[in-house]
Image 1 (cartoon, one colour):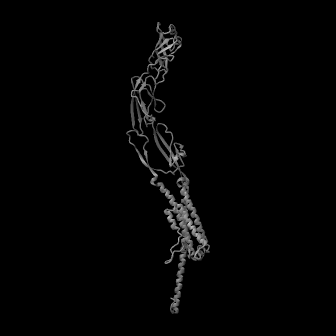
Image 2: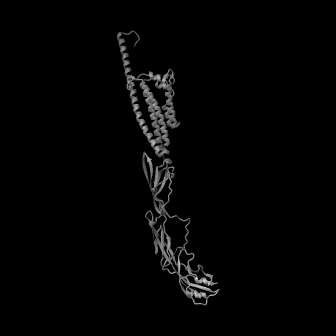
Image 3: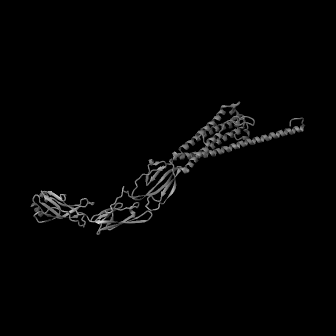
Length: 513
């Protein structure tokens, strides 16, 4: 437009065109500057929202670490370290923004923040960087390397962080080689663009924090719900079954988490010692209690979000009588004795005592689980019938016959000696005559009611009670050494005042010395 000879009119047209272009450029420049300012405002607002959300996640991790230190303690330590590094770097960049905003009289007058000289002087010196420029790059590198060290050098997250905070040389203009990152991003840029760029770095820091916090928290959540944390648990409908009965129950998946430790476990009114809570399991060790069905009731108490959460415990188990090492029964020894109270123990394995009933002639229940007494009457056999109600409501019944035997014949004794005895006649006169049941299963006490005495050459003397009367003593006094005095027809009765008649005891022969 400025070449060749031009008319005045043409020169005026050209000048107006140049002014028009300048006016358009000026207008566009102001719009771009304002756009940077508005973008900076929006980024600052978003950063505040992300920062608030990050703090909420961090606070939640802190609470979890206090409630479940084993599971969340290390996670919170990592998150807190990331937070400290991030806040330090954000504070540094905020100080830079404050410095750059001081170069203008009004930080909101974006259209006037078009100068680049002040920022260039701050970061650049000739073809190199000022101390401030070197420090800026160092701050970025320190933050990047510090965070990568916390999340792990070889993780996908570390790769993203390296790219996000890359300060390596950047590709230059077309046909030129690479140029330093700081020059590429900040040299010659308007002031408002530099401030917005710094706010963008702060956004990158908040986003990095958010990603790390969420990965730590959600990673643990994912681990918690992983199927590798579960094992199959068989829960029977009841804890004791009888032969030929169908097994009934269910299979559930139970979570196995060694790091999970309740604040307290209460079972049947008693707190379980903390030493019994290991590897996410509560080890139980308590007396089984009475025979029959017993209940297990209690609760798990967990601290969650500052409140105590209760998980109820409810179950039951059966106690059956403890068996002997071996059960040996003599087929011919089902015997009860007439005239005495025969103790019996009657039970059904797996059935509580209050669900068992036993009947039989002369049978009665006494105190104690399964304890009975039987006083058989006449006849040669006694039948006992036992009925029991199982947990499923089914009733079982069984009968057992017992032979009835009389109390065996007692043995007569003088001075507790049996059969053939030697003693002076003076001792015999003052000795008592007794009846004894040796090797009998019952400890019966017999009282001698009378006996007969036969001295050689003398008439038989009948004595009442258990000691010699005067007539017997006179007969014994006539005996000489070597004579054998016979004591026979020794009668007795039970001291329990039973009406049962005891057979006469065997005779005792006494040789006079």
